[in-house]
Image (tube, rainbow, N blue to C red; front, top):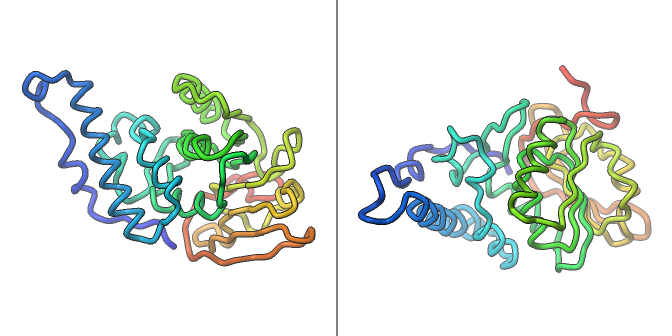
Length: 245
């Protein structure tokens, strides 16, 4: 399961570029464009590749991904590849986001921890699928801007924390689901400890440049591992992650 880098021009060519679109406001034209992009993203990038959880598909079909990317990358917001968001971080490819969230098998009443807030997009999707989301970000500036963005969007069931995500967030533990949006050399023991019995941890594990996405279920207090495929993420920084370079 690798982050792909296909032709960047397909979706970009559909963005409205001319005046008020024949009497419509620019804002209305942008909303229409974004809705079309989300429909195409869900059908071609997610459903056709095997994402089956209708709640995940619906949440990603509603969430305005273009709000979570830098302005200069707005035309590429719904394309089939990750995008840089500053601080050496990325917003993951839509399919990877969907696959990781689907693996958590959320039903709506869960408390979830996300490690690696980034721009806040994945946390926003999680917030549509779980009762409470705690998201922790190592980079102080990314944490600040994500907190402001999510607050503006009225997503009141998300708490953004600045800190070492490899240690989890014990203050709100235990969690039914933990999603790690950065690559660890090994499964951080603190994260597994903070799972409920029967809880699920989704995390990329491996080298800095290439990893394996794993689903770890906590059954009888022991890890049961399912391998979901190959992937490539930015490194997890912190005590149980990688050192900064």
